[in-house]
Image (tube, rainbow, N blue to C red; front, side, top):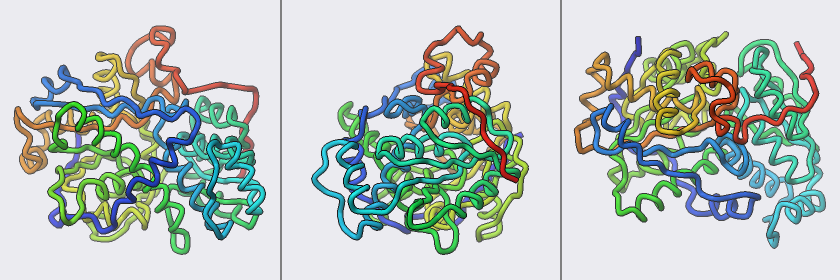
Length: 402
């Protein structure tokens, strides 16, 4: 059964939005183009709202997730910091890579991941001619590991949870290796903050598409939580002090509801693993200390859901031709929970009516194709789009590090 929690102190963002710099940077990367904003009237009818907009991140610059936006921008900003100067006068990643080698000692990137962020960091390293070491929690899906290896990265499985992999990746930090994490800890805050800024491109694209179609901003935005980086980007974009933005609802698994636990305790709290949810990208012990100020200040309501609702969200997307993985469909799953009537304390404050417009972020495609097809109840050959950008499996095995 889903669990809901209202945030009595919800208001404005603490930090400002980053402006147009991240998107201007992303436009220079290979394969950049805005991802689709899909109008989903059939799902809107099911939810009893006027519009359901789906930002489809199943293919972003050839990868099956939005994560490359944060990983690439944070890496770029961190490399500028290492160089002690702006990295300018480049028109493609080959030229940028030459600047990196000329002006910095960095030759390797490292990161922890449940799949998508690590592959994004590995792709960024490949663009720049750098090595990559990626650490994953033991038990990470083989398809996700193979996808990271396909980018030329070395993958190490670490015993424990995602937070254990984060701790292991931090050990690699030195003059020659840059750790690119989407979560933060004391003394390590700049790069995770730049990751959040990188995600702003998603929201700028949404604004542009809505303006083109003559639509106003959504009334409700639903965002997946994890450590809170994407949620912080949403808050910074739409909940500035001088604007009247949409209501925002955060969604996380019941077994890893670290943000909800932190809201209840009015300060950051951990929910230790193991975290068995199929929503692998949201299986996090602890909110990011960089994201937390915006998350606790700008999100109106939180919902924790079970895996069955995530699968239902995946199937609802599949019925309208959208491929969304377990984490990707969690936002829609949260709306299905609200519509179920089991969370009246959440539904009423969101103010949903037949005229309301809702934005959900489908944050990934089928990053584990076998699990995807099992969830949506189709044979593995039924939907070729399910594998788009998901896996290119060379031979190779992750090594274990306990």
